[in-house]
Length: 128
Image (cartoon, rainbow, N blue to C red; front, side, top):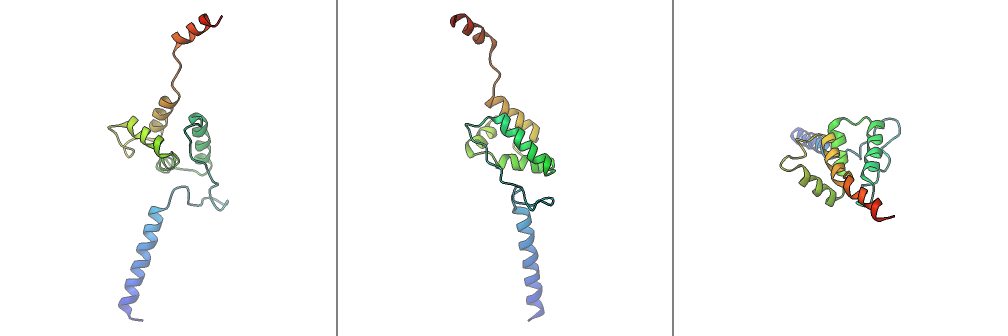
């Protein structure tokens, strides 16, 4: 085989390997001795967001996710409607500038607002 062709093929092989490593999903990579990360279901709008976050953080702790991988995996597990909602909640910031903790707090505050005290007082009065 021609030496120049060998060089070109070797460069193409390195480029393909590099692209495959960069574009791999954070959840698709294997870690530890288990041979891979178990299937983790996406968040659904009918699910409790606080329960989902607790389960996700458990997965992130077990697999030693750093901050960037934790944020990327969290965003990847959100359905498109919740992703768009979170994008609107952090506007004018972007996902690149926000931390995982801030994204988590904004989404939780929106999906699980604290109940108002005044209506709850009146509810006991009217339900005697």
